[in-house]
Length: 475
Picture 1 (spheres, rainbow, N blue to C red):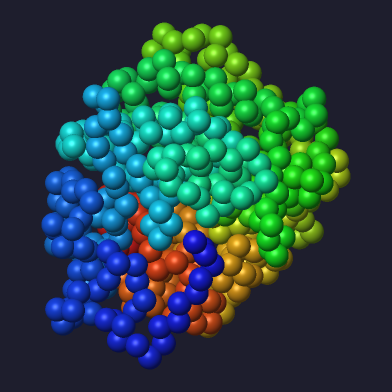
Picture 2: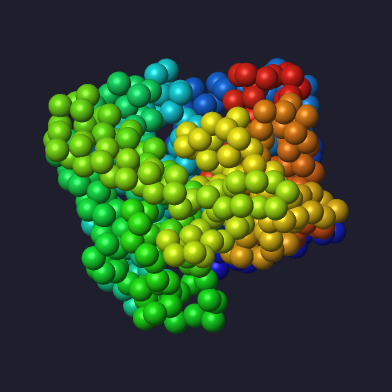
């Protein structure tokens, strides 16, 4: 259950790496670039379209290490985390995050997101993602404030003793705006890609109502709303002050997020990247409701809320940095307090163009990016192994590969993109997989050997470059 466990592999052979059971290296490995995918009979889910993509890239890529990493990483979610079935005649998909046997709304969406373009040629893959939408709908209707869920109500969560409204189906109940945003993102992305409206029934419509209600409650215009959270812990970031209510805010139209996507508590509850994300996804859902002739009042409520938050961002999500100019702060409270930093997870200020919330050429974003990738950002580290954004979740000297991927995905410079790819190649510690974080001076010190989101996100970057700029991935 400890997401912060570090593994040191210095001086060990590949076969000695500490890995999760279905991520173990096979004893027959004779080459440093032998596939580390599970045997076909042990894969949780197979997609002919994804396997075809892996084979195509391997065939065209002249860099054997990069081809090997892509082969290991891109299908990792399918190979190791998917539990797909039919329940009551409908597809149902439960996707664990990797080394934790629970499903995060955020992680599960991000894990399958790169597979959406392949749904048109792979009906089995399409049905699996349809099942995930169904499962996320169920989860939101159980509790829209929860971030992570058990497969059923019989599993006892490690966090069952948290002082909040825990239910048997919940793994964790940390209120994070992005959890609901990711579910909306998957629904919209699936609909736009496939044209299929089957998942969007009355239950899904009810889940959108629950999302809007939750967002409005967490604007905290009339008190703190129904949510509170405390945990017995010696880690400040794992609980909330003021008897579980969190730090005070001034009601200005922004939405409070008591925790970040890293699952760490916010310092100031208006988490700006997540508010940007909410604006984007509320508008997407409004588009869906209108197009499918569903509840038009709900569609209007989504648009009205998106516009209100958007206007508040223009007023309150601005900060001045000497020598750079106006930037986007990470957190604010609606009074005068602002936190200027970023986090290695997504959404982050760095990732906003990836989420469609701002153009990567926008001067405001460029200023923000310049600040984030500098030593003015307290959570930017540079060491012997690499450089990048860190965060309090695993320490200020531990760089997140996901943030390096985001840096590449939001860059307009081929040189910078190549720099990021080379850094990812140098810091996987010989495993062929991405990790949650690695020490800035020694990549053999890393956290989470089995983190499926990071693996699939790396695959998404490489596949996108293969399609758009193949020369950057040696193709």
